[in-house]
Each structure stands twice: as C-alpha cells, then as structure tokens.
Length: 463
Image 1 (tube, rainbow, N blue to C red):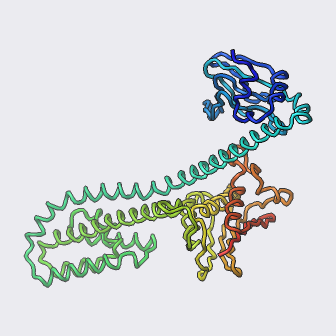
Image 2: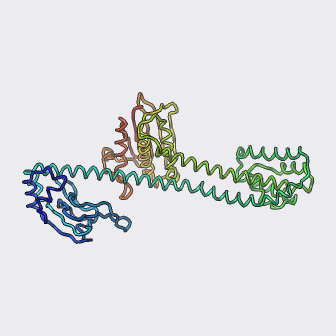
Image 3: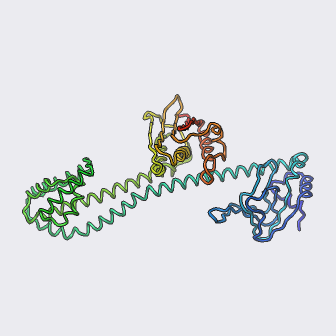
C-alpha cells in the first residue's frame, strides 16, 4: 500500500503544505477501513474529527418524507468532517460508503496544537472551510429558489385550473350544441318571409349580443325575468322552454321582445325562429366563455414569462417596476385569495423607468410579498399595501402588511443568513438575505419598520 504521507501529499488542498506538517498530521491521525454499504456516521452523531477519503467514496443521505435522498458524494482525495475554527456540531445526515473505502481521521483534540505550530496546514484547511461555506450557502440559496418556485407553481396550477376547466366544459357544451343545429336548420330554411323581417330579427338578436353584460341584474330580478320568459314560451307552445329561459335572460331578452318577433312572423314560423335565436345566443355564450377563459390563461402565461424574464439577457434594463410587481402578484394571487387579503396598490403613475436586473428584482418582490402573506396567515381583516414613489434620484417601494409585526429584539437579525422566524420546513432563512444582496447589487438599501400590527419593508434603489 502507498505510504500515508504520499497519499496526503496528493490531496489537492494539501499540496503546498510542508512535508513536516503533513508528517505530524499522519502521526497524530488514524486510518479506518469500511466495507461497501457500511455507515461512517449517522444523523445526529457528534462531528469531532477531520476526515480525508484515501480510497473509495462516502455518500451523504438526508431523510425526507421517510425516504433517503442522496445529497452528495465525497470521493478519494477530498476533505470532510470537522475543520479548525468550524462550528459544526452534529451530522445532518447519514454517511454510507460505496465499495471498499479507507478514511484518514484526525481528532479535534489535536487542533489547538495544529493552530499553534502548523500554520500552513491550518491555512489550507481554513480555505477548505471557506469553500465549503460558500458551496453550502449556494446550495441553500438554490433550495430557497426552488421552494419559492414550488410555492409559485402550486398557486399557478390552481389559477390555471379554473380557466382550463372552463375551456374544456364550454367546448364540450358547444360541440353538443352544434350537433343539434342541422335539424333546426332544416326548419329555418323552410321559412318564407321578407328580407325586412330577417333584418329586424337579426338586428334585435345582435343588439342584445352587443349589449350583453352592460346591464347587471340581481338574483331576484334574473329569476323574475326567467319566470316571465318561461310563461311566454310555454303559453306560445315553444319546445324546450325551460332550457331557453336562462340563456335568453343572460342576454336581457324579455317577453315583449319575443312578442315583437312573433308579430313579424307567420304562426308556423314562430318555433323555428325562436329556436334559431336561442341557438345563436347559446353559441355566443359558449364562445365568449371559451374566449374569456383563454384570455385568463394567456394573462397567466404572460405573467410567468414576464416574471421569469424569459429569453432576455441577464443585464440591467430600463423598465416599469410596476409590471414586475403586478406579475409577482399574479403569481401569488392564489395565496392572497386563500388568506382573504385585501390588496391596495398605491402606485405612483408618474414613476420613471428604472435601470434594474428584472429577474433578480422579481425575486425581491416575491420574497418580501410572500413573507408578508405568510405573516397574515390564519388572521382576519388582512391588508397588503404596496406603495411606490420617487424620492430625489431614488425609487422607494414599500410593502406593508397588518400582520403581528416583528419583535424589536430580532429586527436587526432578519437579514442575516439562515435566520428565520418561520417554523421548521417553512423557511431557510435566506429569503431576506437574498433580498439584501440583490438590492446591494443595485446600489440600494432595504429597511424594515415594524410594530405590533404593522410591518413595512422599504426597498430603496437609484433610478
């Protein structure tokens, strides 16, 4: 087997360390061998040793929802475990080896001597710790983004469900409705009447379609109109009277309108013409429902594209910040409705365009607004106000909620990495740290002003 000192020299991070210091480490440490599938450590075990993998590999598994998830692998020549000045206490997961694995270990009891006498070795290991902190922070930030995306995806799926279901339902009804037209067309084409009567019927029907929705009837008035129409249709022996009344009432057709149409026609033409009117109105109703649902889907898709800033270069662009805020609100609309939150938009209509990284700023709006919504969860009379204004050469965006507020003693800590007031599993403590970094990138600042019953985040950045 290769000499231990030679193996330590081949570790990339230790290649600049003097041989005498590596010899000291080799003398103080020990070597352990593990068989395939054996555990090196378990979740919760105290981390008391620096470890270097000399052969094989150790896989780190975290338990999530009862299943073990592989979070990474430490292979031959890599350093893991406790490091000088590290505050690591316990294992967050389980380490399981793959294949025959040999591990060098150095107990933390030797760290004070190392720090006193072997400076190059300490410096090399501190660099390892710095890289590890950076990698862990990056991974946590990515996890935070994925959690945010998960929240947005759940809300988006809910928002898309209603209009997509409406499209399917109305399309099915339209298909069924159109299948009845050929039989009715036979009766209509046999009608003998003047061009003037045809124009009069057309004008009446299409004036009702044009003005549809302009008159809003109460439930009581609509029921009364439907009763009026049913009575007229049945007294005039029109087939499917009950089926026709709801659609006719929606287009504000009254018994007097039908009486007028009747006066223009021969008695035998009354049924096919009234039937034709019903068919035209039903087709219009179903097509309108499909159009409105499709517009809603298009609005949501447009919001998603605007939110993610798809197909755009990652550089600052002049933009109306209200667009990004509204796109974010569209993405979070499900949570707003679920928590019964009243939204107040106090937007400055004269606000100039701002030079920003659009996608990053959308992440700022998401993190702060989502936090505000979460703060009002399980409360009543919830209000979220978003206010924009120009102050000198800066833009101020205030996001205000009437949740419980942030205690004074922790307000200075909320922008610190990994600090969170949320329960386990609901937050990583990186949301506001990301906000702070992005606003700093824009040469701006973010402040919080919170008292019981009111929290205001003020985001300030140059135009």
